[in-house]
Image 1 (spheres, rainbow, N blue to C red):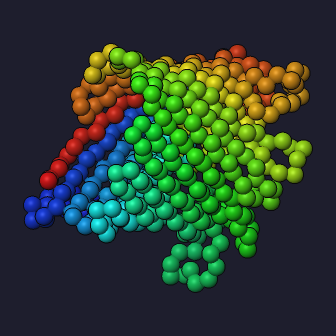
Image 2: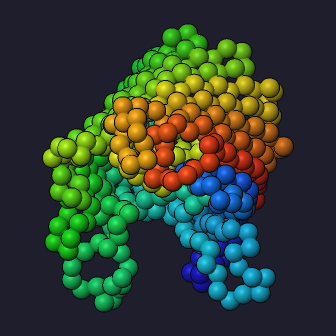
Image 3: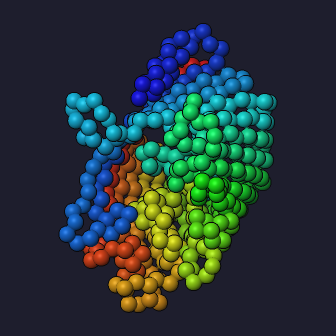
Length: 422
């Protein structure tokens, strides 16, 4: 805590004395409280249990320094539930950490290196995404090389993680990584080529997961994203394949395929598409379920986060045909509507489910209203309704669930620009 407060003070002092610096200094903030009413969010609410209601707030202070050859960014955040601490307290269980702390060294106009804690967000954020909907977000500690010109982008990333259970100066041997929710090593390459009306990108990702003190299992993901614009419509397609070994030493053979068609007319935009994520067949010697690793899954598989968000989805896989539309009433007001139909990729079996040939999980409706009160203040209101099929009871291992689930939320986002010097 003391170190974070010191960083806050350092950012403010840099800005105060920035008149002596021949550079661009910026300081901005973010206050984002979100209230949620959860009546079956993420999983069916069992009969007899009461819905949840709470307010969670993210507070960030973001400082930046930019010169001709160097750029630095620091983002410090506090994430807490309203009322999580008493009015008078000495112990605070809320999250206060460094969301980003990176430095960029520009070798020339086309090449640069970024080192430190940073956000990775590529293509549509299917595999590597910022996870900004979650109040804490997601960031990585790594070294990244970037080459970019008008038509080509090449990014190379390298990470090697260690925990702090044996901190310096006592850490004199071994590189065992105790974390079970993160990679020990990460290497990735992302290449994108732009054409006049099209684009194609390739993501190659290799990561090592610590399985035992002397064992690291590696898995690989390769993905291709294509996009082509025809008039007011845009066709998008992607394919991903995963290989390597998982924690049970099974060979990984998972895939994801997705296609969509976007169309815009006047102030209305529509998207129709389908996602197909493979599920596991327990009768084979391989692991065939696809894992969307570090993507922003909230934006793909329904806003109620029933699949791949904070849960493994029990390796059933998912087929997700959907329809999405947004309507901009004016410059300030926007409505968003999503419709999803969920199907399990693998055959559903369970003691409380008799029709084993029916893989239907359910349908979801998402409605979001967005209003820009000022350029720096936005209000969003959301409501979602999930209509279960019997298969959802087995997939979510829920006994005696309520027939439907709903989720309502309200989020206010304030992003004031405190200081900016050019």
